[in-house]
Image (cartoon, rainbow, N blue to C red; front, side, top):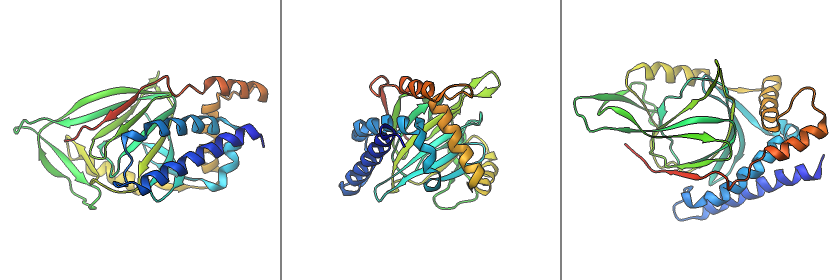
Length: 271
C-alpha cells in the first residue's frame, strides 16, 4: 500500500476526530460556521483519499446505503459530536424541500449541482404543506404562505457551504444532455438535534414521495456496496479503462483542487 495514499487517509481521520472533539466539548455542542477552515482541510484530504488506490481497501469498514431517487450514502465516521458521510448523486430528480435536525457543512468533491434555499412569503391567501418527519407524522399540515426560492448557487467542485438546521433547501443535479452530472459530496453534521425536520411542498404529493423513499431506503452489501465505492473512486480519480496506473496517479494529483479557490457560503435563512 502506497505510503503517500496512507497519509491522506490518516490525515483525514485525524482531522475528523479533532473536529469531533471540538464540537463535543463546546458549550453548544453544535457544528458552527467558524469550523470552516478545519472542514476545508478535511475536504482536501477526502478528495485525495477517495482518489487513491487504498480507498477500496476500506470496503469492509464502510456502511453504504441507498436512498432511492436521491443518493448513495457512505457512512465514514460516527462520533459523539459529529458524523461524516460521502454522498454520490446519480439521479436527475430534485430533492424535496427539507431542512435538517443539525447544522452541517457540505463540500463538493467532484461534479456540481444546483443548491437552492427556500423561504415562505407572507401572503395569507396562499399556502403550502409541511410534514414533520422528526415527530413521525404521516399527514402533512397546511401552512400559510407560498414557497419561493430565496437563494441559489451552483455547488461546484472544491466549494463548501454551511447551512443552519432550520434552513429549507433542495439539491438539483445538472444534466449533461439527458444524463445527470454525477456528483460526490462530503457532509459533516452535528449529532445534536436542534430543529425538527420538516418536508415542505406546494401539494400533498409530499406524503407519498416521502413514504416511498422511507420504505425503499436500504443498506447495500457485497457487490452492490463495492460497486458504489468503485464508482466514487473512478469518478474522483478520473479513471479510464485504457489508462496506465502511473497515468491515473498523476491525473489524480492534477484534479484535486486547492481548497482556497472556491468560497465558503453561509446560509442562515429560515421560514
